[in-house]
Amino acid sequence: MTDTSQWPAAPVYTPHDYALILKLSEVGDLPPTWEEWWESFKASEVEQRRQGFPAIRVQVHAGKFKAWLRANFLSSSEQTRQQFAQQRLDMKRARKAERRIPKLSAPPSWTVPPPLPMHWTHRPLEVLAYFLLAIAIGSLLLALFDPIRVARGLE
Image (cartoon, rainbow, N blue to C red; front, top):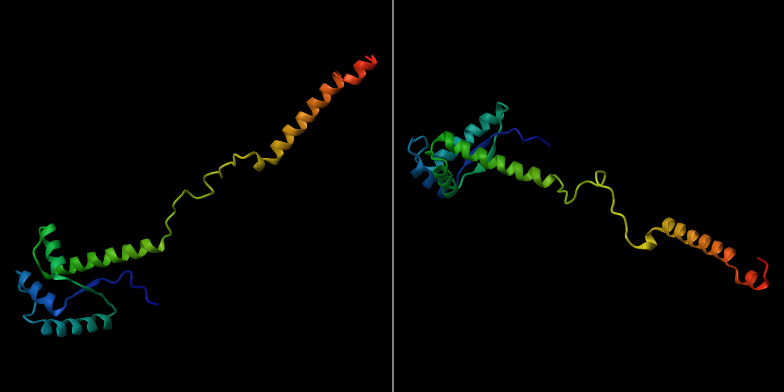
């Protein structure tokens, strides 16, 4: 599959949007009808592909374009239409790249030790050590204070 990540944007319009964008254009750099523009666009697209400089079609919506022009204090021209289309294409590429990267909800496991369990049944060595200590202390106490030895008078 061809890598299209470096291909530039080529602004395209629907007939309805073209009429509105034509009204926005103060420069007069657009043909008077959408059909004329479309024929010219297709011819230039074929020529660019033949020369090895293909572009990706990006539909320009008149309302969004007008809002973008106002927000950036620009007027409509071939350059600003190209800039708007390229910006939309770049945003689409960024969203696509974000979807490819898995989101980590927690830090990676190799940087944080696992939490230790709190219940005594999860610590068998510790429990065994305390149990053996209790047996040793009990045995020592029995050896020192053996009631049978004391009763017989062996001590």
